[in-house]
Image (cartoon, rainbow, N blue to C red; front, top):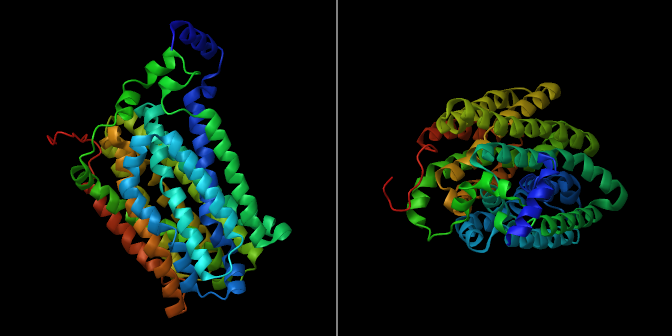
Length: 434
């Protein structure tokens, strides 16, 4: 790029409000991606009562169908980060969006367990690359001091998608049936793909709208994140392993919320589909607040203390212990108001975990941000395979909708303990010196 074009970009940048800067536009479109992808990920839970009745599926079969998403999703976390580091987040997210769009539309045409399972596999492939790619984009386009905020605000958008899905889908279903609802949601995914194509470039250096000042603010973090040296895979995997284990413990509970809330209110409390959706959406709104607070608090603590342990690890522990405390009444009482309130608070605290835990791989290895975050998210993928299936089978075996929450209680405490083995304050060194 010539000096003349750079000066023109600087002149334009001086007249553009900071909140409309290119990095902030990238972040805004990523927020929209998280919202759309989580609507597409959890829409099956809302239509579950009607779908299972029409297709003649048991809770165990429905749990198995939902868990199909996580088989390719988990595997992609192991190698997908390296693919992202090699080809770049812009290209990979365009492919992800296209696959998600097609898989979601075709879900409206399923005729039974086999086709539903296959399309959930396809959705898992499309979404498997998405969040490691988004993490790589954040590491490239935002300075380290904003990484916690970025993870918090994007995941808050994801939880907003969770909260909007039940009432939104019930409204759409009233107009076009549950099958037509999947077509509508799939087309909405296509809108995001177009926006990402227009707004994003692979690196700040390639974006014509970036000024010299904006590029200087990103350096050297962007340069480090943009570097793609050979990955010392096994050494990095061992370093990230404690984070992976903690993410598994967190992910187990998240999958319970994302998968079973509408059916829990519908079948355990005898609510109709409309009220089940409203209660589910209300509970999931707690996660929207939790994600935002977690990201803002993590960056605030880091700025005030300079300690990544305080900003990341300690906040994760607070979130997991708080979620444990408020899930206990869910097992012990059948009062609808008490259960709904405690579920909302439990989800709020569990979502405090998200921003700091996604920031940890960026703290440890920014030059391998895609690979490291994928390794961490492998734990979430394995939880997605086991949690829906175990919960559904436990309901079928025991006839209770409360007992299956006990697994979440145990794993939340295990995750809090394992958090002490994470060391975000110690950067990973490829030469093996750390």
